Figure 1 (cartoon, helix red, strand yellow):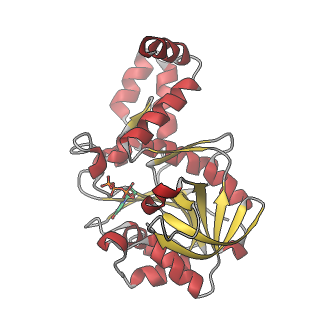
Figure 2 (cartoon, protein in one colour):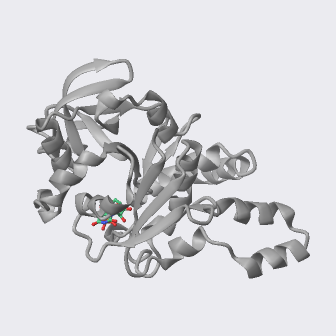
Figure 3 (cartoon, protein in one colour):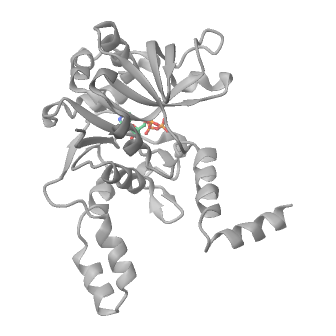
Length: 287
Ligand code: UTP
């Protein structure tokens, strides 16, 4: 049973400057909700009950976003704006179920996950990167939790990417594919496209065994001088913990990049019957 999720939100968001100078990247809005809310809603839909956010200075807006706002709620109530009231109430994480921990320096994804090590009691936990927004009939993490078996070891959501883009991802060396799952015999962070063994790339949804904290605790620097989660996945694999890729049903947008964020906005706008007609008129003008 996967009941705990970790949300790393301590990064600098430098690819989105100047927007992210004073606003956390995870609070960037797609249509009408910040990225981190999409990730938390996905986790809730997958049955997550404990939400661990790894934050840093300047990320306080994230904590506020999932808290009560009594003054706002009172005004909406008094004005009879019941739909809006319900919208902001449903965002809250119930008291005692959210934990905010600080990462002092953005040393990498492996390091930020390691910061949660004392707060996870179960054998396995979920990890969600809010900048990957996934639109799916059944939420991506729910699909993973339903498919997950202990023998899968560490499970990572994967997508097929163009060969010239593999150097932006952790990439699996595939042993075999069975249904939606891919058994891996290796994983490399940001491989040279000429040397990559596949185009099966890890995106921001994981189910991790707590044994991952052992290699992460070694704090070895990897690609880009950062402590890489991918390297810890490789160490775990070498120590006998399986690494399973999961091909989920749905569309993923990399909202850590301007183009991915724009694509997410367009895709969600196109699937919203209220907004879609306006979108069509904008494209008629462009064409
Ligand atoms: P990214 O590498 O995409 O985020 O990490 P970033 O470093 O903030 O972005 P750029 O490259 O400077 O534009 C994915 C997620 O992991 C978090 C980020 O906040 C983001 O949500 N992260 C990353 C941390 O919390 N700590 C880290 O040391 C690294």
